[in-house]
Amino acid sequence: MPTIIPFPARYSAFVLCVLGLVACLALVLASPHLWLAWIGVAAFAVLTGTGVHDLRQARHAILRNYPVIGHLRFLLEFIRPEIRQYFIESDAEAAPFSRAQRSLVYQRAKGEPDNRPFGTQLNVSAAGYEWINHSMQPTKLDGHDFRIVIGGTPQPADANLAQVCTQPYSASVFNISAMSFGALSANAILALNQGAQMGGFAHDTGEGSISQHHRVHGGDLIWEIGSGYFGCRNDDGTFNAERFTANARDPQVKMIEIKLSQGAKPGHGGVLPAAKVTPEIAAARGVPVGVDCVSPSSHSAFSTPTEMMHFVAKLRELSGGKPTGFKFCLGHPWEWFGIVKAMQATGITPDFIVVDGAEGGTGAAPVEFSDHVGAPLQEGLLLVHNTLIGVNLRHRIKIGCAAKVITAFDVARMMALGADWCNAARGFMMALGCIQAQSCHTGHCPTGVTTQDPVRQQALVVPTKADRVRNFHRSTLHALQELVQAAGLDHPQQITAHHIVRRISDTEVRLLSNLVMQVQPGALLGPLDHQHTVFRTYWPLASAQSFQPVTQGPHGLLAPGFAMAA
Image (tube, rainbow, N blue to C red; front, side):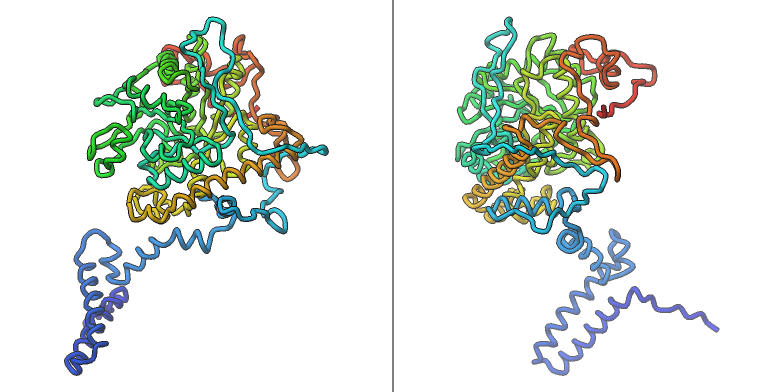
């Protein structure tokens, strides 16, 4: 008896399409004037043709085995992020920002009430839960415009006056973090800068330099200088002092920030493909139109910590004495210690340092870099803050920080760890209307924030969104004012690790000051025997003359890691 091979059920959809086509053709032959039959012929012909193509194509195995119906898999995969975001994820599930965080930004940006009824939705018994201790005698502050002065701090008696900051900047404690024109749309830049101008806070240009859109509304700018030296480069990509001076002395530019690395992809660099280098982007960056725009992974203007300090002094002098500093994500501890030793050796100090955390965002980065390269903000900030205290330089250098700062408590916590001010990027993007679609790298941003498509950009109405940027900043600082008052303080800078409490387990809570490293002033200027392991291990390896460690064993560095616990 012959073996009967059963018909594969996976072809059922394709067979039904073929049968439907045959049936509709028969109906057309019987009733040529029946328009529904013609529509059926067209529809089933497309489906049948799709099935034939699926069987013959070699790219997708799922379509060869499941012609026609296999496309449902790709459709569901395509809409999965939206389905998950709107219907499945909880309010507290952060990926990377929770719905509760996003909703708070939207409410504050729109000027809507952000109060919540019925109590907290957080699990206060969970390990890691944190709160700020309040006072029985809260203070009453006149306003929420908290500011700090960057630059103009006391210098050594033998300091070169040409290398001293003569134009200190009074900055808000909450500002817009670095996002370049090119990564963001023209309308997004216009709205951010107008919002900054209206609210009296600073707008970091990102390494893409100062575009024409940054200049329209006159908001304060922090000019970021990356390894590509955009806006101040020669044709070969090296630094050009004359072009730098022309931009840096613009009154709208308040500070100069050298970008060493960013948290989302430290040590990587990047390339803006030629197709995306439009005339506007080329004009801002000083590069040719239609040619790959390269950001090297390291700077060509310096190669040692000492050379870097001289570069800082050079930019400060060329800018006319404006506050000059650098931004980086902490990597090898001995490299950071080498920079500090260069400050000691040269007597040159930056006016500020911005610490970027590995949890920071970017338009596009390799997954391995986003997930597994660079120190998180807490560890980076703690080491920078404590190192400067340990060498008696903290009073001369302000510290900013950036990475997932959304709420007033986020700001307060970072200040407790040592920051003088905070920057936010994605928070202000949400104020512009970003819905966390995570399609920034595709050019198809649904809200017009991260696209160069002129049609998509039209969705972002600049005056409306500028007002929302201002509102988000104002409401966040108002919430910070209430936290500061509740703690019995007069300024966020008075918040220390002694004010923050962290739950360790169901039965134990500890002050943050008992959990994190705290170095005494000048402690690193003497013997290191009683200092934290990170200093005992890596400080002797650091050199002002090189970013490389001074000594290595036969199998590399034979040293323990660096936990930032006490």
